[in-house]
Length: 378
Image 1 (cartoon, one colour):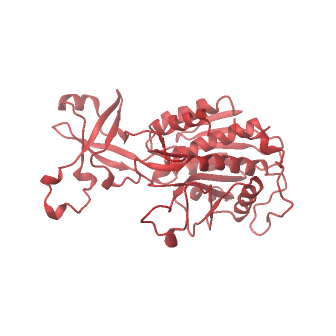
Image 2 (cartoon, rainbow, N blue to C red):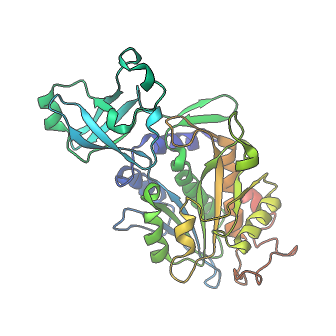
Image 3 (cartoon, rainbow, N blue to C red):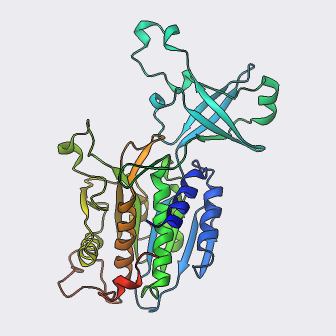
């Protein structure tokens, strides 16, 4: 991954966007795609849609959705002593919070806080093995009560105060790779398609809101965009470290390529075409079984309007919903190549009706070998 693309990824993950408060990242997406897309709009849910018009009106339109909200906390009470009580925004594990540094986002700007808990010396022996619930934690701003009450309001959002860092062999760690790396992928795919002469059909990149509390932005975006076919991008659980049962959760390895989901939430023709695109590009890929609805934007997109043929692509992620989520940067680059090829291969005659749109050996796509160089790394 080029340095300038790493810089953009770092900017995305370090820009706060807790669920329901995604405006700062939405502004980044609009700025990034404003000079690439033919049209950029933001709906009343806060989701951003960018359209790159296709070259053939008969070709299917493709929507790529990635959610830009991150998990966090919200202020629910300010004590007379100036300490904050909180509730979770999305799936926050209370076990990871004690001792964390956080940022409280107020109208006057962010304030650094510390998640406090009684030290082990003052915890009764029979309580030490239990996880302290959110109701037993407080946030200490280090300020006098009068100042806290002046600056902080009930409902202010809170994010983890950690950032992006590269480490190891091609790995990166940060908060909220779930799913800021998806927003990065969506932007990069649009840039690749624009550089390669566009796809046949319209391509719509959508940065959705409120995925962490029920794929809410995807519901409204899918209804408004009404694409002919859609892909959701998210992260999935890597199972390549100790303590994870691969027999139960599947074998998903960081650095082994993007993960293509298969199951009832996934249109079978879209699945087949994703696999065909990966093979055509020589991209290593992994398969993930999803025997029910997924916990991603795909669940909402698939059943929007009268049904939208939907696929799901993920990258392996270690330690999901913690401040130290880990990805392999090569997986992100490979995913951009895969989705770009998938988009370029969508011709006018594609059918997504199950059992009637099988991918054949001759269906190599309109992209072909000549497109490999055209969409290469900038």
